[in-house]
Length: 193
Image 1: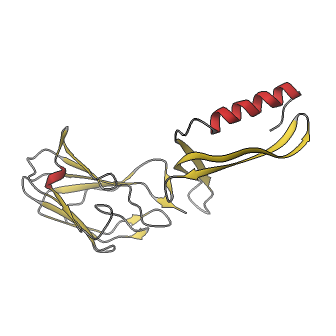
Image 2: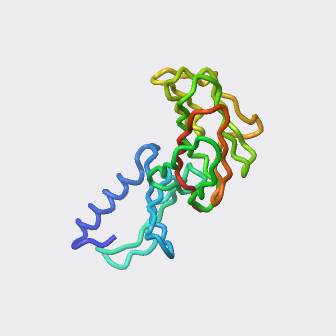
Image 3: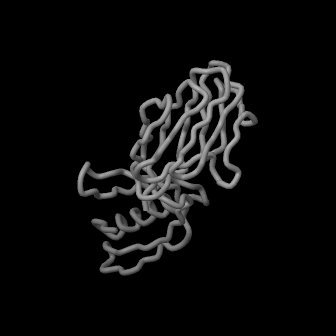
């Protein structure tokens, strides 16, 4: 922190304290990941103040270095916006951005009144939705929510029981296939270390 005067320095300290220590509430932490090609990537994670706000080194009455610890509640950094793939009506082999597999996946099933299953052969996972009424069904694979219009249809979703999310996407190439007809639109946020 660098202030023009001691009062300015203390005001900056108080402002930093108010920003970081917020009674245990969470906030979004943003990071810029430098990439060799394609430009920089903005990634986000959910954080919470853990401890600190200690003066590590105070060079003068107006200048000092402050440290504090944050706990990131997400295991990874995630792209700050969704990437939406082209609609899948059969098989597709999209390349998924990121360093590791991502659980931040939203699936929008539509176009039929029967059961639709999306299988990711790369991860060995599948998710199926039944009872479609012709209205699109939107699944949040990480949060375990399923909506048809504004009605929850989570009871009409089945998936591999050995996994902790309905479906993930591996970083890199994924082999996806839709059975049951219609289409599915896949949106995801890449996960980064």
